[in-house]
Length: 532
Image (cartoon, one colour):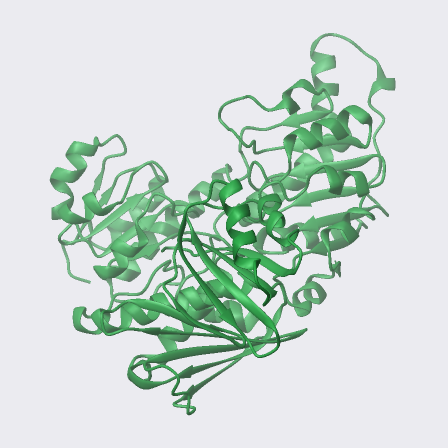
């Protein structure tokens, strides 16, 4: 590491993190109250920038940050950081996704226990100098069924700990292979409804995406047994707050414990009107240990990057030479887009995959492009933990076998990247290319061939190939006030066709259903393309 490299810490981290930076000879400017104007005026002097969630690391900042090599995010999400801008400039962005997983799991359990035994309400009564034991009868956890929605980093830790309480644990996660359920001792449920019918306690641990917003709503609560107890320490809005309130009022739900609200910090939720709910103000990651871990972890990430080492939590592409990046970057974007399509259209756990490189695509680093495909596959369903460094590790943990092949004889398009994914229920093929104008095109999904530029919001519809279908699709799009940027129709030789639309906004599940309600429509899937 070059002595005298400079690090700007623009938001507060633990003192131990600052000390770790200084001990290796870095010059540290700790300015947690720095103004935007001052930040832009001095960032050109710095090799590294450490932020939390408030500082916007965007194109404007990059224009001034001529020496910047790494952005360290003290925490998990990177919504405040322009990833494409960093990757194009060879700037590594590293976060600390694992520093608070234990803390959040423990908070989930604490809320489960406190809500179940009504501990906050009992404490408040005693402070009012009252004494009445009859109001606070709870239930034992032992022998009860805990349902976990999302068996990722935090959900799996909750699973292990609650099994020690003697609970039966069932879980629903359509993106996790069977092996992971077995590893943590959770019974797999194939649908959310199957899980809801059996649970006594419910906790949710999924990322916040268009697909998971309102994931647990009226229909799910209606399917549950009376007396359900609910915990949410993940993200506000994953559980429909109106539906949960109705369940509390009707008695379907006995109690709830909520750490996150949809409109936080604005206290507008109907749940605030129920005395059956206990709240904490998004404290899942707030322990001394977690904040200490985050501070030390982000400092070490920055130290390792400046020392030329590969970091375990690089969220974007590791630094490459400008010439190599110029050609490779387009294929990385293509790989990510092809990966985004898989779980966007299909919900079948992956067993194996084969990536075929044809034409110019075969001349680039296949390992890095493979990581791009994996990143694209996992990114929509494992928010916060997928990057170019750990995508391969995730695939290995999930037991996914990966093969790469050069020039398999695919000559339909030049410079082709083809991804064949084998799931539990069958195989699916995706292909795309980079044109001479460095434009990314998607050319194939299974046996449908077309040529379309991927955009942020896309709709894929499979229909019987009969007259009038496109007009009916257009009519529904119009009723939803969708602006269609482009549309293509790709027929197959079996009497069906795929209609691909680029639209101007995200679609909710009930909006997508309006397309499947059309006679002759066999499938409709909205796909969000990440980092478009």
